[in-house]
Length: 145
Image (spheres, rainbow, N blue to C red):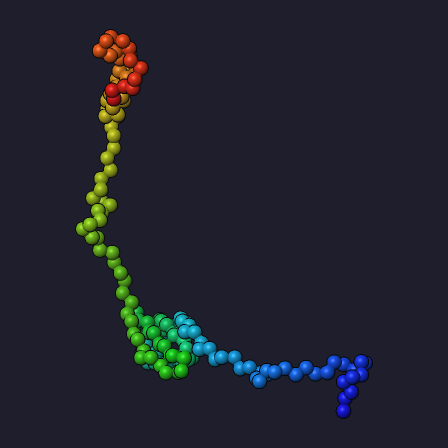
Protein backbone atom coordinates (compact mmCIF):
# COMPACT_ATOMS: atom_id res chain seq x y z
CA UNK A 1 0.00 0.00 0.00
CA UNK A 2 1.26 3.46 -0.82
CA UNK A 3 2.17 5.93 1.86
CA UNK A 4 0.49 9.23 0.92
CA UNK A 5 2.13 11.10 3.75
CA UNK A 6 5.66 10.62 2.45
CA UNK A 7 6.77 13.99 0.95
CA UNK A 8 9.10 12.30 -1.55
CA UNK A 9 6.38 10.32 -3.30
CA UNK A 10 4.38 11.81 -6.17
CA UNK A 11 1.07 13.48 -5.54
CA UNK A 12 -1.81 11.20 -4.66
CA UNK A 13 -4.40 10.62 -7.38
CA UNK A 14 -7.19 13.19 -7.52
CA UNK A 15 -10.76 11.94 -7.29
CA UNK A 16 -13.42 14.12 -8.84
CA UNK A 17 -17.15 14.02 -8.23
CA UNK A 18 -17.85 13.57 -11.95
CA UNK A 19 -20.31 10.69 -12.47
CA UNK A 20 -19.35 10.34 -16.17
CA UNK A 21 -15.59 10.74 -16.62
CA UNK A 22 -15.78 10.06 -20.37
CA UNK A 23 -18.69 12.11 -21.74
CA UNK A 24 -20.05 11.12 -25.14
CA UNK A 25 -20.48 14.10 -27.45
CA UNK A 26 -23.97 14.57 -28.86
CA UNK A 27 -24.56 13.08 -32.29
CA UNK A 28 -24.75 15.76 -34.93
CA UNK A 29 -26.54 15.09 -38.18
CA UNK A 30 -24.30 15.72 -41.19
CA UNK A 31 -25.24 18.77 -43.16
CA UNK A 32 -26.67 18.29 -46.62
CA UNK A 33 -23.94 18.85 -49.20
CA UNK A 34 -24.20 19.15 -52.96
CA UNK A 35 -21.86 17.45 -55.39
CA UNK A 36 -21.75 17.80 -59.18
CA UNK A 37 -20.84 14.73 -61.24
CA UNK A 38 -20.92 13.89 -64.94
CA UNK A 39 -22.52 10.65 -66.09
CA UNK A 40 -23.18 8.81 -69.37
CA UNK A 41 -26.12 6.59 -70.12
CA UNK A 42 -29.19 8.60 -69.19
CA UNK A 43 -31.60 7.88 -66.37
CA UNK A 44 -30.38 4.30 -65.84
CA UNK A 45 -26.91 5.59 -64.92
CA UNK A 46 -28.45 8.25 -62.70
CA UNK A 47 -30.54 5.67 -60.84
CA UNK A 48 -27.52 3.42 -60.34
CA UNK A 49 -25.22 6.19 -59.11
CA UNK A 50 -24.41 5.65 -55.39
CA UNK A 51 -25.13 8.52 -53.01
CA UNK A 52 -23.94 8.77 -49.40
CA UNK A 53 -26.48 9.58 -46.66
CA UNK A 54 -26.98 13.30 -46.19
CA UNK A 55 -25.75 14.14 -49.68
CA UNK A 56 -27.31 15.59 -52.80
CA UNK A 57 -25.73 14.88 -56.18
CA UNK A 58 -26.32 16.85 -59.36
CA UNK A 59 -25.74 14.39 -62.19
CA UNK A 60 -25.04 16.07 -65.52
CA UNK A 61 -25.57 13.82 -68.55
CA UNK A 62 -22.80 14.33 -71.09
CA UNK A 63 -24.67 12.59 -73.93
CA UNK A 64 -28.10 14.25 -73.66
CA UNK A 65 -29.29 17.71 -72.71
CA UNK A 66 -30.57 16.53 -69.31
CA UNK A 67 -29.47 16.60 -65.73
CA UNK A 68 -30.64 14.65 -62.71
CA UNK A 69 -30.92 15.49 -59.01
CA UNK A 70 -30.46 12.56 -56.66
CA UNK A 71 -30.77 13.07 -52.91
CA UNK A 72 -30.49 10.87 -49.85
CA UNK A 73 -31.47 12.08 -46.38
CA UNK A 74 -29.33 11.60 -43.25
CA UNK A 75 -30.99 8.26 -42.44
CA UNK A 76 -30.21 6.74 -45.84
CA UNK A 77 -33.69 7.03 -47.33
CA UNK A 78 -33.44 8.08 -51.00
CA UNK A 79 -35.69 10.75 -52.47
CA UNK A 80 -37.21 10.15 -55.92
CA UNK A 81 -34.84 10.87 -58.81
CA UNK A 82 -35.67 14.24 -60.40
CA UNK A 83 -35.00 14.73 -64.12
CA UNK A 84 -34.58 18.13 -65.83
CA UNK A 85 -34.02 19.31 -69.41
CA UNK A 86 -31.66 22.03 -70.55
CA UNK A 87 -33.27 24.71 -72.67
CA UNK A 88 -31.69 27.89 -73.91
CA UNK A 89 -33.38 31.00 -72.61
CA UNK A 90 -33.89 33.78 -75.15
CA UNK A 91 -34.70 37.30 -74.09
CA UNK A 92 -38.02 38.54 -75.39
CA UNK A 93 -38.37 42.30 -75.72
CA UNK A 94 -41.07 43.71 -73.53
CA UNK A 95 -43.31 46.63 -74.47
CA UNK A 96 -42.36 48.63 -71.37
CA UNK A 97 -38.64 48.91 -72.09
CA UNK A 98 -37.57 50.74 -75.25
CA UNK A 99 -35.37 48.73 -77.55
CA UNK A 100 -31.99 50.26 -78.34
CA UNK A 101 -32.74 50.36 -82.06
CA UNK A 102 -35.84 52.51 -81.48
CA UNK A 103 -33.93 55.21 -79.60
CA UNK A 104 -32.32 57.55 -82.12
CA UNK A 105 -29.56 59.87 -80.95
CA UNK A 106 -30.03 63.59 -81.57
CA UNK A 107 -27.10 65.70 -82.67
CA UNK A 108 -26.70 69.46 -82.67
CA UNK A 109 -25.68 70.93 -85.97
CA UNK A 110 -23.10 73.71 -86.26
CA UNK A 111 -25.75 76.24 -87.36
CA UNK A 112 -27.98 75.41 -84.36
CA UNK A 113 -25.03 75.73 -81.99
CA UNK A 114 -23.96 79.11 -83.45
CA UNK A 115 -27.54 80.44 -83.19
CA UNK A 116 -27.70 79.33 -79.54
CA UNK A 117 -24.29 80.88 -78.80
CA UNK A 118 -25.35 84.24 -80.37
CA UNK A 119 -28.54 84.20 -78.31
CA UNK A 120 -26.59 83.58 -75.08
CA UNK A 121 -24.07 86.35 -75.91
CA UNK A 122 -26.94 88.80 -76.49
CA UNK A 123 -28.61 87.83 -73.20
CA UNK A 124 -25.34 88.26 -71.27
CA UNK A 125 -24.56 91.62 -72.87
CA UNK A 126 -28.06 92.90 -71.97
CA UNK A 127 -27.53 91.73 -68.41
CA UNK A 128 -24.35 93.81 -68.10
CA UNK A 129 -26.08 97.04 -69.11
CA UNK A 130 -27.00 99.24 -66.14
CA UNK A 131 -30.68 99.18 -65.24
CA UNK A 132 -32.54 102.19 -63.99
CA UNK A 133 -35.43 102.29 -61.57
CA UNK A 134 -38.55 104.49 -61.91
CA UNK A 135 -36.85 107.51 -60.35
CA UNK A 136 -34.07 107.46 -62.91
CA UNK A 137 -31.33 106.15 -60.63
CA UNK A 138 -29.24 103.10 -61.22
CA UNK A 139 -30.20 100.19 -59.06
CA UNK A 140 -27.76 97.66 -57.66
CA UNK A 141 -30.21 94.81 -57.36
CA UNK A 142 -30.24 91.53 -59.26
CA UNK A 143 -31.09 91.31 -62.93
CA UNK A 144 -34.56 90.52 -64.22
CA UNK A 145 -33.55 87.22 -65.84
